[in-house]
Length: 318
Image 1 (cartoon, helix red, strand yellow):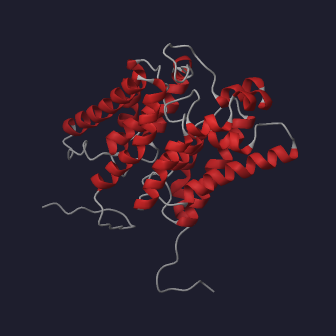
Image 2: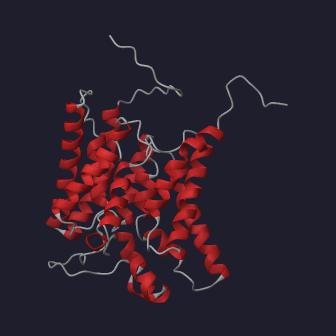
């Protein structure tokens, strides 16, 4: 029998890893089903390829390195699904495979597997693919269409044509319900919110990161428009566009890569929202959610170091 040693905090829960992971999969189903409805079989193809690749890569690495096989605990499935939701439905099969290989091989297993990775694996793959294959990653099929005509996304049109044109072209109700172009996880804020409510009800995520992330984004956009009216789109437009909802609900809340304390998670969410808005409005990329979360993932150890809960039974130092 092996004695397993691990650093504090030694958290214990009656929930198994498998149960938690598969509840996250269930919470993702509304958004996944809607993306298949909007984009058809190509969306299902992307989902199946990325998920099969992440499971296979994790199995191969664990088998060859003589590690405990845990590729079916649900974490690899979640990585594959989240990766798919960060891709357009037109993504070629080989790019889905490369993304799955990067997510598991570089984003997760190189650090030692589940619980050891410092960055969200799906976002690592998304950023690498975006930088390496910008044409394929920015080809957005028209929603509810039978052909492969490319369409603009709300943030893409905002960057090229300005706030007025973007807001006229994308009604808020279409953005909320999911009748717009974009990656699989960007098309319906409603379905993502439903999934988030499921996780909140189960207690698998906390309110602090989503609220501080989304709230900071809203506040920053409001202040910028207050100082310079018309510089960017409205607050609701920014909240419903791009990857903000999926990032705030499903990716920034990752238990492994987010801070341990409530105060730390509020700081984490604030940083994500701040960086997202700065990139969206002043940066060269139309979207900043992925970069914001990865940058704050890197800050998580520092946040945990300096924002610690008071030791039980002790008072403040005089």
